[in-house]
Image (cartoon, rainbow, N blue to C red):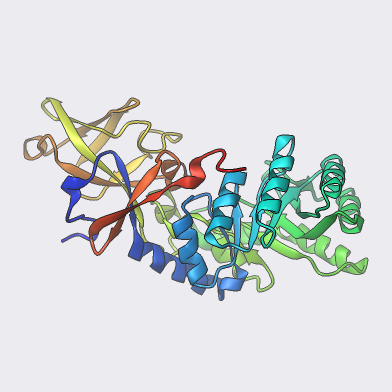
Length: 368
């Protein structure tokens, strides 16, 4: 019986998200092995968004996490995480929300990113007025040009300011190089190392001024196996926990297994050679071209030729063998936004579903 087949699949609605618990556990252990220890990981929870999976990581010794939203930070604290970095520069009402979250979980360190002097001043003022300290990392732009302060003559001024304010606690640098995605590991590693040269020079300048050695959180999943070779660098992979087809094909040196699938059913056979499934845009991430959305494990010789909100249309070779009601198991090309489409996930253990987990972190707001 194939590993993905669920004994009680007839009880499961479709389309639905399946989480394979044993495989999640194995992926966590492999992630720790690559890093060398759980201590080196700031695992990104934006992929899974589930408190239960955060708890599984904590059970293996991971205590530090990265996330993208305040809601994800809240579910991480709910699960028992002790150090949570929100990998965004928070502005507007989000600063007050972070203050509320810090008061709700006083034993948890919540940090965010800073890349501008103006926002640093706002954090210093607002947190100080609330009797709190703003925990921050200086966000460094090492070439992705999405966020972060450029590595220029002014970055040290911002570092000095963040290091000297009474109501700001600077922990270190955040360096995200997600733009480097070569399929070949050696080529990717070379590009990552080249992009890190100026970061090293900045670190030397910091030490030369007598400041304490900062923490450095670098990279995401594509850069994980490169930054893991830098012994003093913290790593923040996320997709590894669930894995997907996109990274599985691209990052051949990473040994992770698919742990999240989409279950869908054949709902129509409108004409010879064509079947329709209940897997539209609302069931699998659709930001990529149509040939990079889903890969079915129990279907061959097919092509996804169309999608709308609730329907997926497939051109298939073995049309006569397929029946309305047949179950298909598919691997998302991009699992992170696919998970975000579901309120809950069926949890597969010993090839059976006995429980459901809430995808709580997909919400924009939980309590704060």
